[in-house]
Image 1: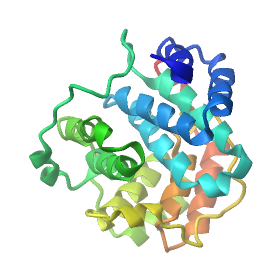
Image 2 (image 1 turned 60 degrees about the vertical axis):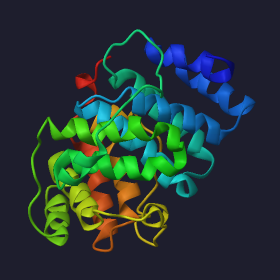
Image 3 (image 1 turned 90 degrees about the horizontal axis):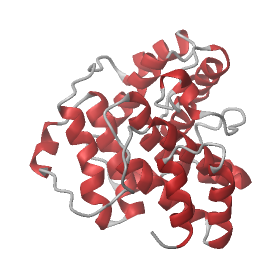
Length: 255
């Protein structure tokens, strides 16, 4: 594995969490911030497993790109946190991530209508134009694997689900329901819908944090907030409240 990725990926594979920040910043300096993000995103996609932390790690790298303009000069810090989260949440493996030799049955994508399978399909569609055609099979295997896992379906209007998330002060299950509802509304989204930058979702200050703490939902909520046109700032305030005062889920990661 040549170049900067050759120095970074072994640290991710071995979960050398304390060494990842310096290696990631060295990568960004020698290559670019964008190339660092691509390397971390590819790792997260190949490290995907149908566990809450592993799939949220993939959603987090998409979300970090979606809020890049809002992150400003902290964007590298966000990529570092995404790298650490991807490393600590992946299941054990012994080989570096490989994008080749994957095959998926894309005809089954039409079965996806709800739940985490829809969230991973939404994420895959957002990442594909950023990671390129070579990664298509790796991306699409995520929602297809979620089809076999099941997961709770989401019922109710988007507005009622946002109201519930606000009332529960950003409870993880309620916020997830909002994500799913937004993805349902855009079941067949265009590339542009993922790249839109609305005037909503600018609550407070978005500072890098240990993403495993809340399954990365604060970062992801800011990305989905770009696609929400109802009580957006109140929704994000509730999510931030949960980050500060809710349960800490970091102990459930693989590390």
